[in-house]
Image 1: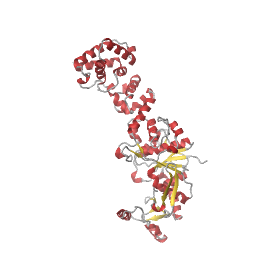
Image 2: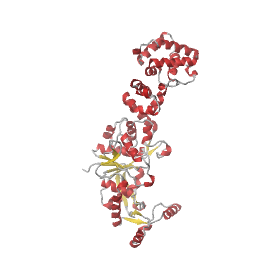
Image 3: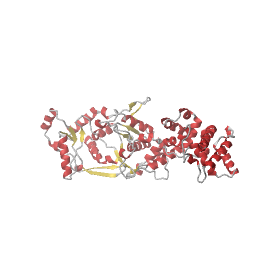
Image 4: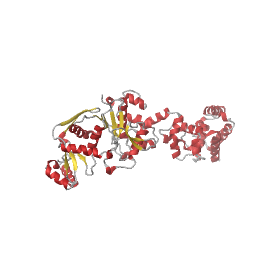
Length: 495
């Protein structure tokens, strides 16, 4: 049986898109489930749109998501780009002689032809077709040029491209893993450019040649490439090569059913990484965009996804990128991590926010901060936002905030003063969340005070916020000295 080999072939024209992550993930899951290989090939033949650093971003995004390639472009031990495998080079700009060889073969077979049409002629042709409400596409003008005429233009170094000689009759049909039987009429398919004037191949030629030479068995890509597939199948037939199995994945759309793009917000993998989403959550969420296991289970490790994945359960319809659902996944995954692990992952976000380095490195304090901030956080960045007050030397808030409902500031002052005196009697070893809560609640009950009359001004004095974690949790993290200091500052505000 032929070994399963899948690939992700992004162009280095910007940050790695979550739609590309979806394709890469399905490539990875299918390969791993079937004991195969997952490859990364860089398709950099569109020289005008290259963006510096994009290749590094692609590789780093896959490594961050824990789906690094088995073969192709990757990082070495020093985090420098390298190529691994026996089918390379895996960067298309390093394979130009290979493409020229196969273009020459197509020309010899009359399955491709030289085209000398100028940009002005092609622009006029398109305008005319649009004005007459005809399908736009090349009209085959140069297909009928005589051999002598072609050679004369070549000898004169006339600018030219090489086009696919697409059959005019019949249909091209294939069985798609997602869309079942798909068929296109050949007469409706353009004579695609295969080799550009700069000597670089177009995607359509390079992808077929590379997939064949790299022995790719399965091609999974977004449904926007569906109309390109008949051109590729025709090329396979022209070369006499075995075709891969195709599967065209659903588009990603936003809540307004618009294609997910940079115009509508963050769409790159690093956008989400930098906001504090965990790779486990991102992969879990993306897997469910267009696929469902058919069970009630929603939280999957990568290993569980490998075991559960199958194309029978991939949807045809567009997948809605629901940010609330992503937040839910991330919150659930943050709960699954130990406090020690979560603190390790959150640490760079605190450092980037300028939090005190000494306080971050105080393990006992910092893990308490993370435990406290996790409860109301959707992302690692939220943990930072939720706990900024814990790092402050002093708090800034309106004095009126210390009032509880129908109470007044003199009453808040009295309660804070009495509570401060009571808390100052605590031994250091008794300063635990459970110990503080039990003692304070008993103290409140003994004096028949209203719980809100005591705990509201206490919490505000500790946090400076209208909404924050409870006072016992905060006091546990701050410690006795800092807690009493903040209650004292609250009293000073009222005075």
